[in-house]
Image 1: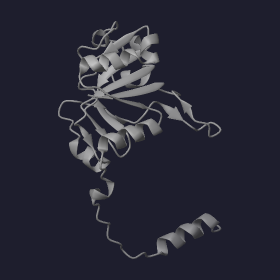
Image 2 (image 1 turned 90 degrees about the horizontal axis):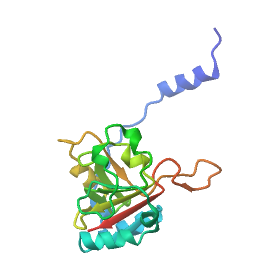
Image 3 (image 1 turned 180 degrees about the horizontal axis):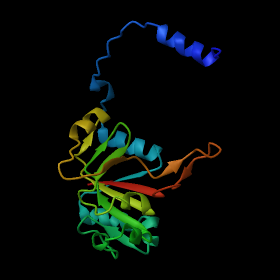
Image 4 (image 1 turned 45 degrees about the vertical axis):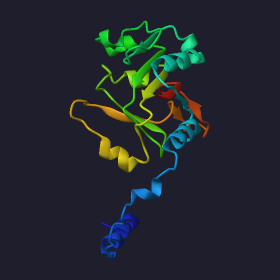
Amino acid sequence: MAETSRDTILQSLRAARLESVELPELDPSWSQFADPKARFAQVLESVGGRCLSATDLPDANRQLAQLPEFQQARLIGSTVAGVDRVNFDVMGVSDPHELEPLDFFVAPGQFAVAENGAVWVSDAQVPHRALWFIVQHLALIVPADQIVHNLHQAYQRLRFDHAEFGLLIAGPSKTADIEQSLVIGAHGPRSLTVILL
């Protein structure tokens, strides 16, 4: 059997001996911010999200009430106690397919990451992981003192003692696969609002 160009390339790769290189030291101080809250808001908004600050839950409710997406929502669900206008019991749903008509969902975020504008969420307080993807508009309420500088710090905080599913959400759903044109809400929430409480 004749040798192919593929065989020649693979033999050359196998014969090559590269010198070993030590891994670099990862010092997370390169990704520290003077104002993590401002950095988080800036990055979140740059990826299509919205960041609001609230002094307490009544203030968060007032700010939610001013959002056009919240005003226009017919069905609103929440796993944060005390959110106004909730008329869809997401905790009472047994089949995730029943969540399809949900317009707006308010959920707790455990912490935020200043480096990339992401919020860590899990299924600890959310009955169906489909909620993160099927709802039209998503709002996350995150304690303002729970913002870490970078992903190194974020990964150190991840715990799966009780939750079986978690993810970092950074902005609304988006894609630029088609003709390199950015489309918001292509395969998930059309808007993401983070309220730092």
